[in-house]
Amino acid sequence: MVDALGTPGMPHVVAIVMVTTALAAGAPVAQDAYLPSIVGRKRLVPANALLSVLPQALLLALALAVPSAWERDEFVFLVIVTVSLPAAALLFLGVGAIEEPPPPRAGIWREMAEGIGFAVKQPVLRAIAAYLGLSALLAELADEVADKALDVVIDLSAMDMPLGEYIWWSSMASSYGVALLGALLALLLHRRLGAFRLAWSAVLVSQPFTLLLALSGTDHGHLWYAIGKVAPLTGTIVAAIALLSHRQAITPDRLLGRVCGLLLVITGLAGALGDLLEAPVEWFIRLSGSLSTPSALLPGAALATVAALAAAVPLLGVRHCAAGPVPERTVTG
Image (cartoon, rainbow, N blue to C red; front, side, top):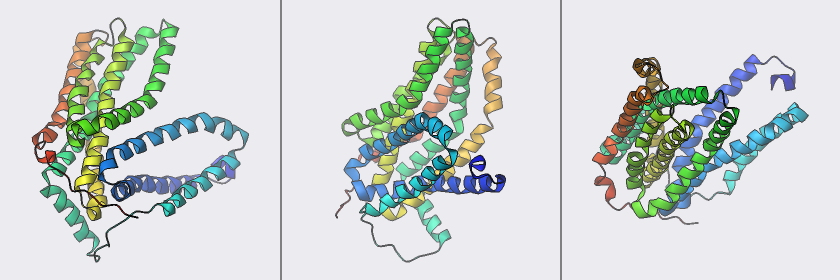
């Protein structure tokens, strides 16, 4: 942007980063709050599944289109992007969201306290908050094990360029294919299992595949790595879609935004604390010596698996509470 406009860039970059960060943080809250009144309770899982795939599709399209457009004319490209974003926002004017009349304003602190109090009183929402917080806190375990397993795969394929190219292309494909696969599974299974049951079932079934990362240093290690990376991530996406849909269904319309904001704060703080685990986790993984043997990666993979399954314990504890019928929303207009 600075090169295209020909002006000193640091103030502009800081302003752009602050504004885009605020918009990125507020977008999920607005989406979560308004979606139930638009699509209705019975279509929440399909709608959330679609919305989880669209960003990946747009990202892929931009990745293919941006380099050529940027090389042709930087300024024209920036103008197109700047105009297209407000134009996309104007599309909301054509959406008929039926909302309850807002209650009298009670002050920001009182409204925040109301959202927190509702989440605390509802056992299912408490379980969802605990799962999201623990998952964000312990995610560094799986990430570190996966990074070490990938290093092993790359080291073993350094003498075989076709294998290295295969790993690169499979990694690129899985970056976009996992989102599509997770959304498709959520769409196919939610009616049979129910959203909440689908969430904890996806975690229990998918996370043990992390143990396959320990086989990254063996024959066909690139295949074991791909399965050990893709399967748990797919299960996480399915659980995220299902839990989001169930939370939207059981939360009153006027509290949807506040509950979503609370969960974003919890996951953000937990993720920041989880980043502090990087050094201890790396030290633990390297205790077993050479990473090229299954026995070396197995302790870290086992610990990551146990942590992921432990995060799902709160969901299992309230599975009977979440099995009851959810009141239907009436969408008119």
